[in-house]
Image (cartoon, rainbow, N blue to C red):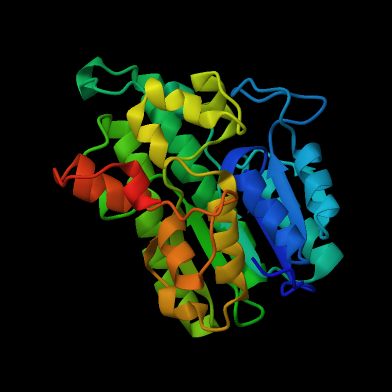
Length: 306
């Protein structure tokens, strides 16, 4: 990756930057020189329903600044319109501009009951997924976009799980399936609405993400993550959060990024397009692996797609 500060002078908001892809994307924007507002519900004083107290927005902001940018942590519940309105008013007051909006709010993995029929689901948990993964994105864009469209070249990134093509395969939980397909349609609609303002909107997904939560699930670390392949063979295609973060950086810095507007993108796709790799020098193509090998029956293994 380039060491240039190609995003110096740009202002970004990463909504949902406490951990995982959101944190990595915020840090990478900082590494490129951006000023980044990072939001979430877990702070050093308060823990969200996700229940992971060791990951806070203050830590993320410090990582952004340590990487070379400016990180500003703002505790925000993106389901509360008043809090989101106050957040965007603060950005306007302090910076007068917004160049990149990343809607990465989620926090609903603990609610998923895979391979469970709709009538057997915990309905409260299913509806909560809609609130966490759809309502938060719509509320945030409603208040942030008037600031973003002041200047042409603004970028909105709807972070989700699975490309639009991959998500044609049922995700084995109706509420999860709907929640993770909605960002594709949000990006498609916002692309149409932003066009006259010179803005770009895309949906973006990582592959099999080695997030903090996923590593904990398998009882491994980033250093020995391959030990988990014995339990879950498909984990061999896993990627670090840095891959999607590097994709966002490249996209944000691309003067011709509007060619992607309205499209569903993946970290692996952007890695090929912009010629970057994951931290280990590989370029995992998660969705190619699943489409051709796992679902398509092609001979081969995950290492053929790295």
